[in-house]
Length: 215
Image (spheres, rainbow, N blue to C red):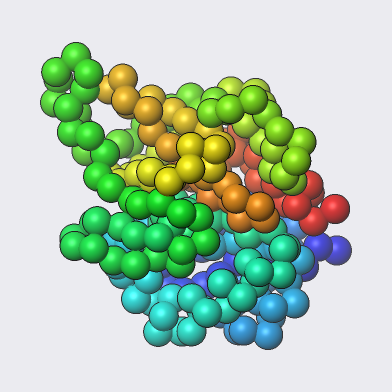
């Protein structure tokens, strides 16, 4: 049985993530206990809301240190939505706020105007097609995750801009502009969309990531 941990830090959609994992045959542990996190086969960091609040909660519970230490073990770490954004160095949401610094780059507001000149609705709330940003790689455990384009559910006003373009694993489009849909570096991956709310495609992706990450 895979020892799968979902981090509970008082931000958002932890229960829906746990329920989705149960639907695909896993029994996740929802916890903020350091020892439980350290012994996990894989850690998932969900989240909805503001970047600053997410980081404040992580620090309050000492989870920023635990997550950074876990990432150094080489075991798989998955961030979802805000859980993806806090993997980056910095966010400009409501001021400048430091993230976990696991993937170099910044989080900035989505462009408010389409390439056509039309005003875009922010937040970006949509089922958007996600495709590989680069040729699928077999080097990382998540290398084939976005080989086949699929539609996933997005709800966000800010997006990640990785410093190294190779760390952008997948993209979507909004108003003609690229949206970073997934980032990855070594054993760490983040997705901007909500796989737990993306129907069969989202469940298939979660299953792939857990199974390949922990095999």
